[in-house]
Length: 316
Image 1 (cartoon, one colour):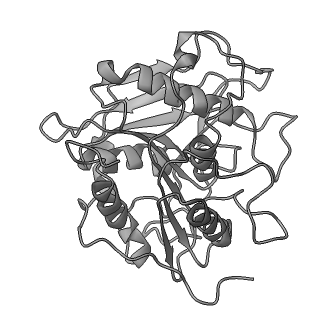
Image 2 (cartoon, rainbow, N blue to C red):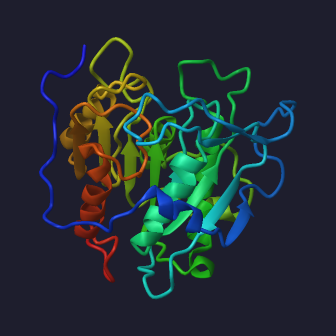
């Protein structure tokens, strides 16, 4: 059962930088960093070499073009791909980006590279996380895979440990995710109290709590048969501010996933903003299209400004 009335949070009266998918090819990574000092924890291997393949056509979206987009799969060696903004625009903030793909693949182009280019347009360093996919045999379909949580916790700590090297403020490191990657972003924002793996080195002594989170058309947030948080998901003290965006006609991830989390955040006193777009479906990414869902990036930029992420001195 879908929402009868689409929900939308009040918009802050500030516009973000406009971005077109045509700008994405101009985003050039400055470096690629391995996530783990050796083999990733709890990694059985045996899935073959990592490779890139094309997705099915995105005909379930508001994307104006329906061509395929590049995906990455068979990831056993997680990495961070760093995209830095122009020096004269750099605000000293960074966002770790988690592409979606159901924990089977990573929509690397649509929900990784293009997102990094949009963040660069705001003066933010975009860092795309290549986390482990596909699901391993002990990670059942229909549930969140567990190894990506290990990767994302390590990634936040690694980025914070390299803040000086990357030229970013260690107190302005956020996370953004799409679809299954949105769930991963929320998991990072709520499960920072306990590591999902045995510490590997000194980097794991650095906080893995992101300073803010952005989750777009996320899944795995709601219990399957009830309008409450999914089992195992909670909102602990210290949960950072979270921005949520969803389409109310999403055939892949019901908008109630975001609605249920928003209500839980409000109840816990966590600053949150929710945007649900009438008629929007899935996979719209950050592309400028002929639908109101494409304005979520402007609303998010306004929220980031309000939170102080894009300013010289962040708000508490």
